[in-house]
Image 1: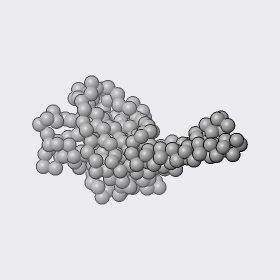
Image 2: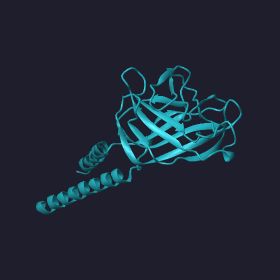
Image 3: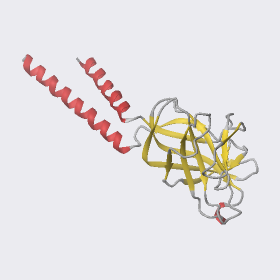
Image 4: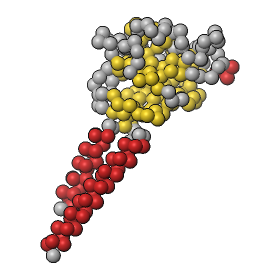
Length: 225
């Protein structure tokens, strides 16, 4: 009888381990399961907004609390004119590392190629223009290290040959620095004029998922026994 009980427990344990492996693999391949807001500088009604186009680029700093895989970004902005009469958005979204002096490096660490969706909101910028929300799902999530300074740049490169194509990145109510440059090969300059509005979503790294799922299983097994 004891052998049957022990064998049964071994089978249950093996099944549990296989289930944990399957869950970890599934979450790792999906890239979106378990996504959570990891950094937030929310928008505010009536705020100012900074130009961010090919000839006048903006960026802002952020730090994640822990390691994670970035799988989504959201930001807010507005136009000088009705976007229906402007060229289609052409956002260049980039992540930069720190240059060691508290500014973004000249060249990006990651440049995302995914297309953002645009949705009008009930918010207005300081000039009374409609604020839009932009959501970007990252098809190939990438790893960032927690407690490490990074910088997000969102540039709408729809302006060449269209002098009326101006896009403005809305400011958040949080105070801090932002960064500006006029060409992709220039160094960034820091300005203490406020933080830009954006969110960053992450999923735990595969190793973190494995440890969490395995720990949960072992706790459940000990309670059962």
